[in-house]
Image (cartoon, rainbow over all chains, first blue to last red; front, side, top):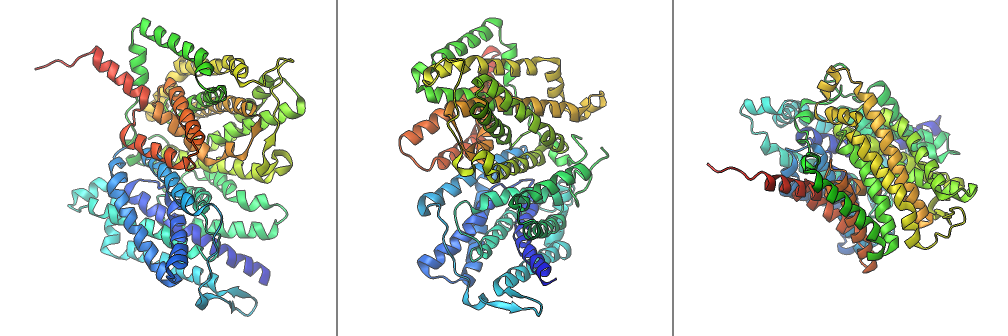
Length: 293
Length: 340
């Protein structure tokens, strides 16, 4: 029993990263119709930034947790204004290609400066050790990640669902022309929303730094899994993307624990789930069907 | 509606049909024959002009690019996972050549058939979505193939790769890349001819019709999904043909052939050459392969920086691609705008 709970908890922690990345992808897609391939690269930059800040300037984890999302969010906004903006009226595939190119550039920039080997990042002292839950102990840091992510998702959900800004974003996502017709300046929100999505990816990166190997390629493979996650959840649905993120995290952790003799299972289960969803509900579990087939 | 799950915004954002092919089709007969003759002469001369090994790579990548363009340019589907077919064929070709000792064309055929077989289930699932989702789904399935190849070390040798893929051909010595180039040239030309035939067949016309207006194609009674799937499998076969030749050409298969960067590179080669122009992909392949060879020869390490830069520049400034731009210029030259 305690073993099962432990695996479940680990699954939720792994899912938290998927959820944060999928959340950013979904908000950006909703507002700009852009699928940001570079999302994984920004996750990597978040982790690498935290590492460089600590190693070369002695900036602690907590400061990095604020600095990196802000800095990357700003970079994202500049990028949106400079290039992505020019392509949003065209087929979304062009921006997919553009951000793919950006991914290669960002990866190689980091690689040529720091090499491909992984860099260690110490867990902050306040979060080292374990928390005793009676039946089992958990690393404090993982408890922190899970709590923090859940809080963040709830906050985003609250902003989108309950505030005026959220109302504008949701309206612009679903009916851009109609929203404009009501005299709302949709364009004003595009750049901040893009920056926000990137900031979430950077935040996920900083959170990952003490737990996962920090290297230039850490985001690339992850983002492809996150693409599968958003296909499963339905990219148009913010709730669906987050739910699918946690769900896939759980399934992967269980697969890893109970089918450990087949390591391939935990790596590929997400794609198998994606195939099943495509068969059963092509629009994604929480996606909207636009018209009958 | 393209499919059940496309939003109106996705529909509206679809690109205008590329004009390159039309321009060439409307060109006078002698222009077309002259272009074809020039292309054949360049193909025959290529291994004398540049390193034969690079020329071999160009041929393989040309097939790969044309296979991607068959979907992207003529069916309106951007596959971002074509490395799955290129790479699967490379592995199957390598294994067949090593273990069965067959002449290399037979091994390549086996590889290409395996790729087509793999394209069947992946295509069946992927054509349920369109646009950007299609790209994500194909990318994800290709990554799955990559993971499987990485884990299945007893067969694929994992990160060491398959070493010593032979170039056996009825006792003829093909170890020299120069001769090997001429040995695979007929196969590559056959593949390109097949792509050309597909595009200009009634089947190809239906594909273009589906690309331009899926709703109308469906209303006319065409089984859109089945047409797309057929195109996907044919494209997978062509990509496999290229991948198999690539494996024999390098005498080595590494996991790189299945990596997502390979899929992305194939797409940018097509965009650079010109989407929907078929021969543009061949030009794009020649340019990119030559450039990468030159970069690695000059000791430049961050190749991704250059490839990525090309991606960004082409998408921002040069979306018509080389062939598309030339064709558009030719059209304007033939029909000068009237004044007043």
